[in-house]
Image (cartoon, rainbow, N blue to C red; front, side, top):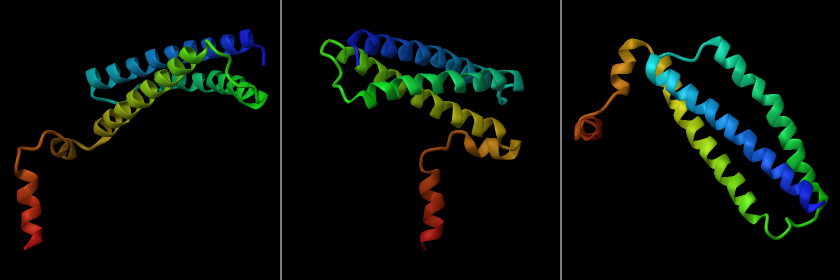
Length: 129
């Protein structure tokens, strides 16, 4: 594949990941401030990214299917793509935790909070005897 096309595809993927990163950050802020899941409107915005990401994935597959190695000089872009994806995965994982916490019934939210040191050891100690 042409090195210029490969570079353009990688740059577009980085841009898409940056847009998704901003959306994930916004989602986390919504859940932290409201202690509730995001609204349906926000979820629709998030769903609209699926089609865009699918197109980006198809472009990345073209690079892979060409069989040509990544041209020299584009390694930093590949590393940046990987780093962006890892950040997205970490933020999404945190958002999943926030979503779980916000969807728990009130009596369970208290249990989900901080646990005093030694409290877990005491609880397990009761069951080991």
